[in-house]
Length: 90
Image (cartoon, rainbow, N blue to C red; front, top):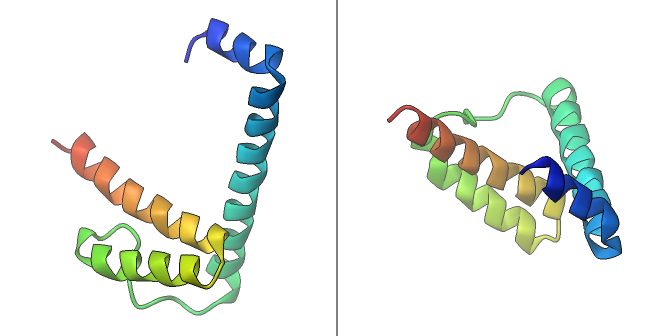
């Protein structure tokens, strides 16, 4: 994204509102992750381990089914991170 693209975001009301939504959602994701990391006991999986993709996907689906879109998004981020690390390592 170049400087011109950023300028377009702030010139378009719909894009500004979308930008605010994404920032607020990302903040909610971070807040939940930090809380889980410090408050809850360790989970039986490692979010960076490719062997746990099926567990992570199952938890993503379960959270989305329960209406917890923030946790679902966090599991999606874990899966995205695993795929990104695999691609970056190629």
